[in-house]
Image (cartoon, rainbow, N blue to C red; front, top):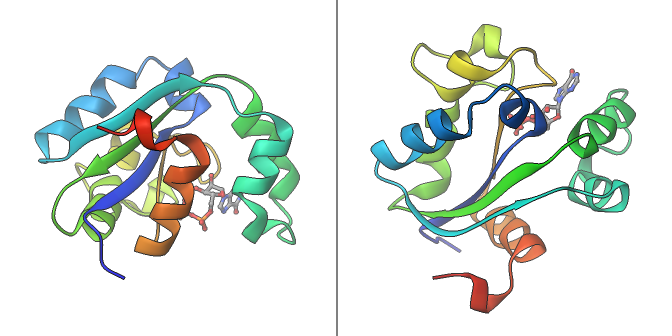
Length: 139
Ligand code: IDP
């Protein structure tokens, strides 16, 4: 399945550090159209479900704690080749390894607190978007 949408979150560290505006500017300047967006906070149950694939990893507890500690911005983005292009825009998971000019290079502070999420496949983009938005919240 190929789609032209991806799902993103500005994570609690990105919000706390005052980077909502800077990150949205990078996203829209790169040609992504915001088709859904909300300011919200994940419950523990939400975060555990969203990151269920990592439930056996040693950092899972830390990840859930981090992702629930404050508000996030969740959004669905549209662009040709959205998933791959957005992963390139955000950069590597670890900001120390992220390319110059990427969102994580600019705004992330550590491998855990890395400012943004980007779906890693078209299938996950659809699942993650549906996790946060109903059909009538997508424009
Ligand atoms: P991704 O977000 O670049 O796709 P994943 O490997 O899917 O990276 O990991 C999901 C999230 O889990 C990361 O974005 C980061 O917040 C957190 N994470 C990944 N590896 C570590 C780690 O070694 N320590 C702490 N948190 C981690």
